[in-house]
Each structure stands twice: as structure tokens, then as C-alpha cells.
Image 1 (cartoon, chains in turn cyan, purple):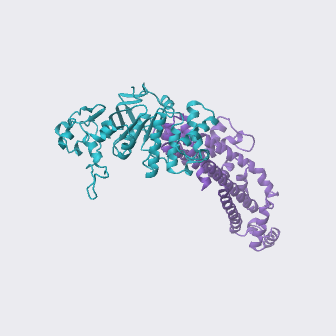
Image 2: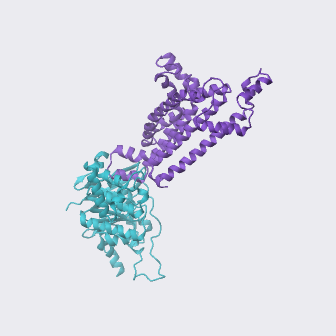
Image 3: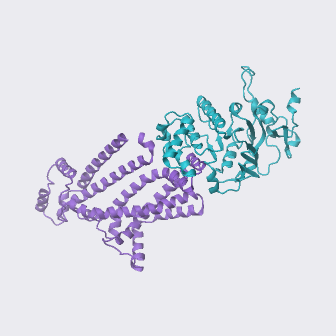
Length: 325
Length: 305
């Protein structure tokens, strides 16, 4: 099956800073793929680069950047803008500021359909109302006439989601869509995304740093560190048999009820994501890694630990199991 | 919206009353009016006569109330110099000043808005730096000097436009350019900084993620928000242009309100002076009110505040 989105060797630079250093991942139709990692590891930049939405000064290169079988890495701004909002849509971390304060919800939603499909206003309004209902907003007619400042953060994020769905996209990229929302609203939004994926057959690329979110809705997980995808696996496989020391460290940071007793120290990874100087070789995690060895300064092999489970590490697959035994 | 309107209107009326009072008091503060009207060679009897004739012997409070009650009804009395009703004088000259101000503002907007937007889109490029340099030069150049240069080049050397006087549209071009030049720098800077801020905002990223056209992103989503402070400043600038037309109208010998103000000040024609100050102030207040209303139209958050 051709992946809906296929990214190989994605590089993004801002001046001399390399934010993404050869990241690879793929999203299947109807699948939720979570991209996880700590702040500053390049998750958001990766998602923006895929959409062609990098801020001024960002430069993108990719060996492969394919959407629905079509190479989009070489497309110009005009051609990309035909895809964006139509076949690939994106929602953001900041629901409070992502809507234009000067226009009503209805006007901002309908303009997507009018731009890509030339739909008449009345029909576009009907579609907007229908989608507001679909994302769980009561009284859609009222909301369409309201301005963003009249809505709460959770409502605004629902509006953003509904707006992203206007043209029935195949791919939805969600960049930490619940980070700015309170916990109960977070759960609602995640349930909503999960339902949409199931009902509409969307491919979802969900950026998050929250492993709890990953465990709940991801079909597949890619762990990102310092601009590289260091491990990628189906969710159960990754949680059950993590291979990369960084992944293991991340998982150890999450207290699991029943396994952690009160008073036990919480897991943590010492240090922070380093700034990677130009021309850096080897594993970027080695300074923080308990298992670092001389080979880590050389070229790092990409290994298959299991079918569909890839890891970027010098350790042999299965090292962790042997260590425990 | 109604509350917003009422609040702005109340403030406007209070400001108008204050200006009314100040314009009355300031003319009285400049010394004994009867003496200055009578001139240096007048006898004491002449002065007394004038004081009697113009009612200057009455208590100040009574003069003020009398003037206020008439002014509110649009009656500013009779000019001492022109032998005409002050209201007539102003009614004849106001259209010239208003036309000049609007021409100047229109020219300024036509130049400043596109340049400001282009500078913001190409922030940091040579286009941006060039535009900002023009703004700097414009700000540094005295308007009467620019007026004289234009007269020499466009009027004398090229003979394209009349050098001075009041008449058809061609008489408004040069003074319009001069007025526009004084307003362009601030309008352009504000447009640029507003656009730079808007273009870096999250909602512009959303607009791009929606695949909207470049024009829609820049103008509909970007400029719409950047325009809010520009509208306020444009109204203030128009006010400055009408008030500042004293210099321009004098340089170009246009018989507008500014020129009238200059004439009446130099001739101690204080009913005219008072009325001109008041009319200009009222226009200024009306413009500020208009800017507030336009802002409320542009920014929905103001309407519910």
C-alpha cells in the first residue's frame, strides 16, 4: 500500500542551524501517526516543512517528499497552496491566536471552500454549519456569526478542526493541538480527532510531547531527537519493546499507576537537547546516553528490530532484553 | 456598539466645549483688544468708543456666555476687517481647505499604503531600506521649502502647473503634494510595522495553511489588521493638514481657512480668529470620532468592549 505521506531524508536549516537533520517518516491512509520528542527536537519544524509553511529564512531539502504518490518537494508556492487546505490540512498549537480576529467564524471557514472549489456562499455556509456540528459544537448557526474573541480556547480549536475539514482532506497534520487546552477539553479534542480519523478515513500526523496521548490514539509512533527520527514502530511494539536508549528514557519519565510507588523518584533524562553544530557526525544523543560507546561517534546504522520497527542506534536489537535477563 | 458610540460622543462634546472656552480665553489673554484694534495712534476716546461698540466693556463672563450662546447657533458675529458675517467668510473658504486636505490625504494614502506593504513583505531587503530612506527624507524636509522647490521646478521651469492662487483642480496639485509629503512618512512607517507584525502572526500562518491566494493573505488577512492603527493616524494627519494648511495656503496664496486665519490674526480680527480655531477644532474632533467608528468597524473586539 502506498503511504499517503512519505518523507525521507528531510532537512531544514535556518541559516547555519540545522533544525531537522534527515528525518524520515510515513503516514498511511486512515492511520494516526504520532511524532514525539521533547521541546526543540524539530517536531513542529518537520510538520511545517511538510506543509511548506516554514517561517522566513527556513530552507527545506528532502530526498523524498511524496503526498498521495506525488512528489511535492519541488512544487512552487502556488502549486502548494492548491494542495494546502484542500487535500492536506493543518491545525496548530495556539487556538487562541490562530483565527483572524477581524472575521467571523463563518467567513473564515467558507473562504476555504470558496477558494478551492468555488462553492457558492450559501452552500459553503451549509457545509460549515454541518462540520461545526460534526466537531461537537452546539448551535452552529450562532457560532458562524461570532468572532473568535467570543469563543473559548476549546471552541476555537474545534473551529480550527472543522475549518481544516472543509474540503475533505486526505491528510490532517495536528501540531500539538491540545497543549494549550485544559485537561478535560484535551480529552474531548483527542476523542474528536480519533473519531474523524475512523469515520472519514483521514491520515493523521499528530505532533505531541505527551506519551499519554500517544498511548491512547496512535497507530504508529516516531520518536524524534535533535532533528532525526531515532525510532519508529507500531504503538504497542514501541511501548512493549523500546530499543533506542532515548525512547526508553522518555518512557521512564512517565509514571505508570500501579508500577510507581509514592516516594519513588520519577525517571528523567539528564541534560537538554544539544545544539547541533554544522558538520556534526554520529549520534546526537551520545552525551546523554548511559550506553554510549566509541562507535557512537561514527555513522549510525538504521536497523530493523522487528517488522515495521526501525531504530537508529549502534546497539544490537534486543540489547535491552539481554540486559534485563 | 450603542454604548461605545455614546461614550465617544460624550467625550467629543466635552472636548468641543473645552476648545470653545479656550479659544475665547486665549484671544482675550493677548492684551486689551480695544487698544490693539484701535491702533497705535488712537486717542483714549477712540478706544472707549471701540470698547463700547464691540461690547468689550461688559464683564468677561457675560461676554463669554453671550458669545457661547451665539456660537452654538452658528453665529460668530461680524468680522472687524472684512465687513462680512464670520460664518459667511468661513463658509466660502472652508471648501477650499477641505478639498486641499482631502487631496493631500488621498495622495499620501495612495503612496504610503502600497509602499508600506511592499516594505513589510520584503522586510530587510533593499526595497525596504529604500522606502524607509524616502520616509526619513520626507520627515526631515520642511514643507514650505518643498513648496518653493515645486513652484520653481513644476511651475517656472516646466510650466506644467500654476504657481499660486485659487482656481480649478490644477491649483490643488502642488499644495496637495506638499501636504501629502508631510503625511507619507508616518503613514508608511505605521503600515509597514503593522504589516510586519500581522505577517508574523499565527492567523497568517493559518491563512497560508488554508491555501489562500497571496493577495488574500496579504490584503484580506494581513492588511485588514494592520489598517487599524493606520486609520487612526490618517484621521489625525488629515486634522494636521487642515490645521497646517495655514503655512501651505500662505505659500501658495490659496484663499482657504488657513489663509483666513493668518490674515485675521495679523489684523486682530478676533471674532474670525476665534471662529476659525473653533471650526478647525470641531473638524478635528469629528475626524477622531470618525476614526473611532472606522476602527470599531475594522476591529470587532472594540464593538463588544
